Image 1: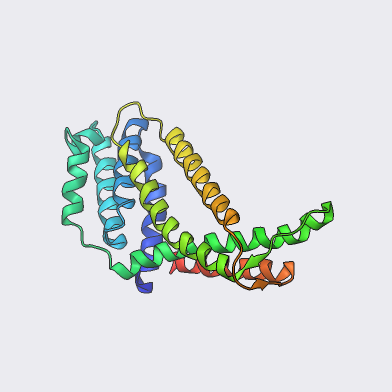
Image 2 (image 1 turned 45 degrees about the vertical axis):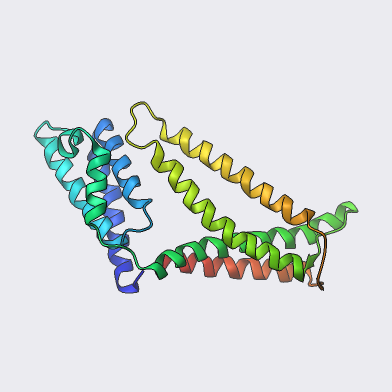
Amino acid sequence: MFRNNRKEIKALIEENNRLRQQLTPDNLKLYEDMMLYIRTDLRLAEYESEQILMEMLHHIVDSQKDGKTAKDVFGGNPKDYAEELIAELPREKKRNVAQFIIAQFVVLIGIVCLVEGLGKLVLPLFGLKGPVVITGNLMVTLLMGIIGTGVAVYWIFKQIRKDLFTEGTNSKKQYIKTGLIGAVAFMAMVGIVYLLPDWGIPLTFAWWTYVLIGVFLLIIGKRLQAA
C-alpha cells in the first residue's frame, strides 16, 4: 500500500466505524456482511474499496431516514450486488498482497521467538530442558511458516466470506469456530516441527536473545501491517 494513501484509508475506516453506529440492527448486519465481503477480498485495492464502502454507508444512512432499509439499497441478492462492485473495483498491486502475507508471517515468527526465549528461561526452573534451535529445523520451520501463513489467511477469509449474507448466521460464533480451527492447525504445525529429527548446527543463544529478536520481529511485522 502506498504510504500517501495510508492516512486516508485510516480516516475512512474511522469514519466508517463512527457512522455505522447510526444504523438499525438489521441494516447494520447486512452492511457489515457487505463490508466484510469486500474487505476480505485481497485482490481489491484497499483505498478504493474503503471509498465505495463509505459511499454505500452514507446511502444507507440517508435511505434509513426515509424509512428504507439496506435491502432496498442492495436489492434482492446482496451477494450478487457485492460481486458487481468487486468486478468494477481496481485490483491491488501484487506487492501489497505479498506485503500483507509477509507481515503476518513476521509476526508469527516473532511470537515463536518469544515462546522459545521464555521456554529457555522458565523450563530449567522446573528441572526441564529448554528448547534448542537447530539451523536445519529452523529453515524447515521458516518454509512451513511462509506456506502455512499464506494458506491460513486464504482459508480464514474464505470461511468468513462463505456464511455472509445468510439469514440467522451468528458471525461471532463463526469467528470463534474459524479461530479455533486455525489455532488447532497452528498447533499441529508446531507439533510437526518439534517432531522433526534434529539436523544442522545448534544455536546456543541466551534466552533474552530470542526475546529481543521476537520483540524486534513483532515491531517490524506491525510496521509492515501499517505501511
